[in-house]
Figure 1 (cartoon, rainbow, N blue to C red):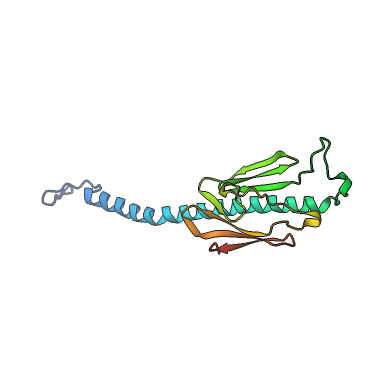
Figure 2: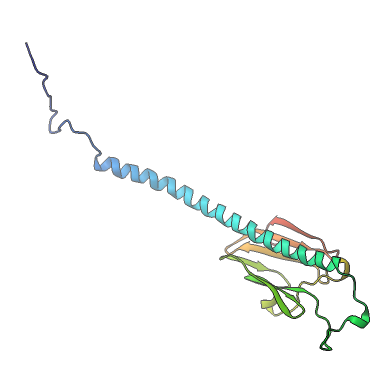
Amino acid sequence: MLIGKKRRLTAGRSSERGFLLVEAVLACFVVMILASVAVPRGMALYREAVLEYETQCLLSDIRYMRELSRSTEPRPKALEWDYDGRPEIRAGMYLHRNGYVIMTGGHRFREHRYAEGIQMSGPLLSDVGTKRPLVFGDNGVLVNPCTMYLFFAGQQSNGRRFILSAGGRCRVERGSPW
């Protein structure tokens, strides 16, 4: 008859439990595989969110300028000069590759720089050599209709196309530049 319990040892192993080095390496390998899938997807979501934010900022400012030109009455020819005897300067948006500036009466009203990595392309960019601003005439009519493209650098196929029509409408489409 046995009064106590026998403690049985296997060949070369004690009864203590723990992780083997192989198990720890395997767990790290699984975490690395999951991270290699999650990090690029997270970056894609970040790029999409930043691009959508910049799209809404630009669209809001373009529509603000259009409504401002609609809400003001056309000026008579006799009043097209300011107090210094210079011609009146309409509000205009100067678009750059990395941001835009809204000028009113020769003064900076607002300056906006795009988030890191966001760029714009199109015919009205001031840093390409043109100094033509985006200007709305009387009653919200666009003086220079065009199509501009906002995108994340290196991801030109996934951008936003701004289509500015002569009637003063502005719409945004997703997809390739042209």
